[in-house]
Image 1 (cartoon, rainbow, N blue to C red):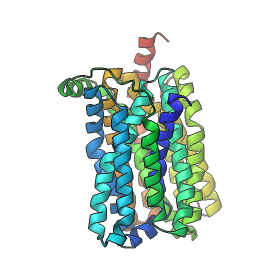
Image 2: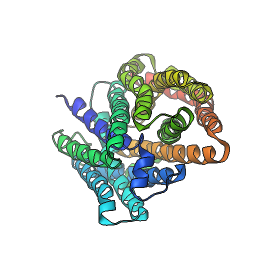
Image 3: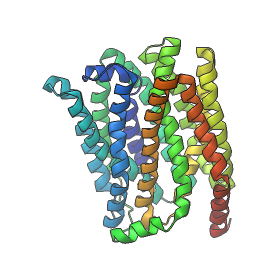
Image 4: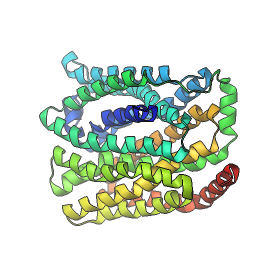
Length: 391
């Protein structure tokens, strides 16, 4: 197995462990002592992603400063596995829902290290930035697809089963990551130098903005999308998982070829046009009058999302040299985690106040807006990158 494949499997494992929880989230939260409304599930997810926001850059800066990544990926995966197991055991131990949320914060602080630095290790490989980020995107998409299907089935058997399964996967990810040679930047750089280098590249805000809104839509579907399909069409957790897979399967399958293609044709069309189509498709799901039509549109959403994800991550690699990629990808994942965080909150709060259709309009409209505003900057970055490589 190649290093690219092993690192992709680590990313895949982290995503599966998270998405296991989404289809049967309401049952899991009730079993852990939370309420049965959408806001209880919102806080359960927000607790983990809030820690992602706070810790992603710290892991990245630490890896660049140390000049090593592999030990930190292992540590992050082990800590994440322990936290998932602790949450699963909390009812047996008599722990309240407040303690569960605290454990979710601790788990998020560890898990983001494994996720972000595994992607950074993919960035360190040769073979083309789009190709390597396509491998990361495929792992993310396949992880989300499998997690949504299997997690829904687990939840129908036992609402705590997704947590136990997630802990096992994260432990396996730690073992696999330990076998990957470290290609970090050697002796590393002082923390102040790393932060200054990232700060001196304001163009990073462009892929960061796309990463933010793309993850916002993912968070929206993970919470509000699942609740919408279950409430509007009367499906159970298992079918909700299968419905999410209609999005995640094409999202996963197309990432690697799209990333490779963007190495040849540039990032502009996949990022900008893909984002606009993505936003339109999201709104269309909320307008669909029947389950079959809404489910079919989820496939379209996945195809459009696959255009955006790997090329956005490749933009980060285009902008930053290898010595600062840990910090840069950490920043990308901070914005991405803020996006997931916002997706949970926007979806939950807007739905609670104005209904599902308004929430779909907000999520899709934000995707279209960011593509429109940032289109010129993406074109400029693509041109500068092509000029620098002589292509």
